[in-house]
Amino acid sequence: MSDSLAPFDIIEVSFNNGSRKDFFRNSTKQLFEKGEMVAVEGISGFDVGMVNLTGELVKLQMKKRRVEDTPEVKKLLRRASTEDMNRMADNKNREKEALIKARAIARSLGLEMKLAEVEIQADGRKATFFYTADDRVDFRELIKVYASEFRVKVEMRQIGARQEAGKVGGIGSCGRELCCSTWLTDFKSVNTTAARYQNLSINQAKLSGQCGRLKCCLNYELDTYLDALKDFPDDCDVIETASGNATLQKRDIFKNLMWYSYDNSNKQYPLTIARVKEIRQLNRQGVKPEELKAVEVVSTKPNKEADLGFADVVGQISLRSLEKASQKRKQKSRDKQKEQQKEKQKGGAPQQGGRSQRDQRPKNEARAEQKPGEQKPKGEGRQRSNEPRGEQKPRQEQRPRNEQRGEQKAREPKGEAHQRSNEQRGEQKPRPEQKPREGGGKPQQSGGHSGQHHKNRNRPPRKPDNKPDNKQ
Image (cartoon, rainbow, N blue to C red; front, top):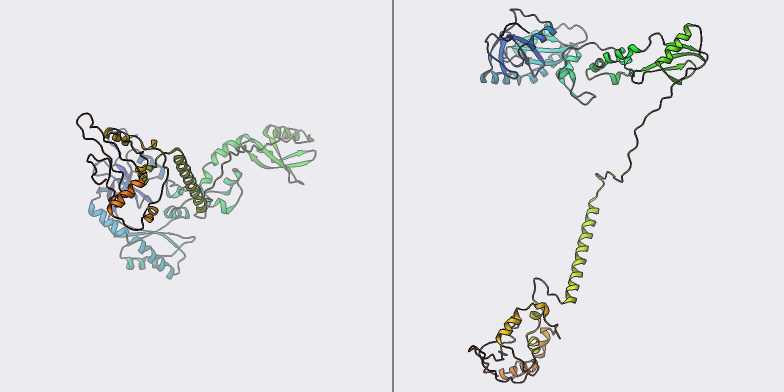
């Protein structure tokens, strides 16, 4: 940490979504935070980038990249304005088209090189062409063609296969984004000895990354394996026994075992580190043990989970099975409704939402139930009408109305029709005169309009009238 209270005046700025980073001196003395867009000094112009690091962390990054704090460090100009951002967006849109044209020109000139990326400066005055090549490339003629074609200052920069994979990006065999395109900046050389130390099979297809080189992650755990191998003896590659010489095949650092096999056999024998050291000590004394005393290695397999009867039926359900289930449910509901209707008919319960049994009977049969000579006062009739219909007596006979109409072949005079209606009522005898009700009410007399009986057949039963019937 610096002794002065002032913050470190150099800022790290990233360009083109982090594919390139550089350091700039903050001569404006303004405070910048990570993620802010700033305009910095470029080649014969300016460039726009994003603040990546500030403060004392920049010192550590400069030390890591071996960049010295000299007056030659470029300057940070200002915060990026709207005009700077619009100008940078216009030039960035030209990069894809420029890359296609640049590849076509390089192919026409017969140069064995592969262009990976074209980066145009924010002000559009400079273009950097990143390429990969196995051998040296003479691109002096190529630069002249690029300068006349794109009318910018051309810079050619050669990169390796790992940097190219980082610029292109992708998903590794681990299922995550490539390390070279996210956080890895320093690319160290990877050898096949790293795979041998980790007891990996030397398979070029499995050990190679998308760049065609050995995977960088082979170096991640190499130090841990080297530390664990310090406990294993180094001079025990071959040990002597009475049956012959046994050669070391592999070291298992997780179980601390060393696997040996005889020259005439493919069978391998696991030995502990202590047993190997003991045999080696006997060999130095000129003694050959009769047996190796191999350790029995039991492979611990996970217990099988109990089958609870669950089966994965995803994708095995058909629409026909669902239709059959719905039809069964509908049939059950219909049968249940029929049973309920039968129970209601047996118990004499009224049907909901319809007319009662008394209302459905013909008018003449309803009147025929009333015995001759019986007459109830008005109050009792109303009280009876208010009783629940479920307590009514069952119907004696239900004759369809069409049969009643068929019995009347021709229309009779009014008097004869009235006489026939009396016969249908059960030939009621003339009722005796009633005494007036208490309270001054008029006596209730029987009688009805027989002539209108057939016309008002569909009407409900009529309440007894207070007026006497003069037609009878």
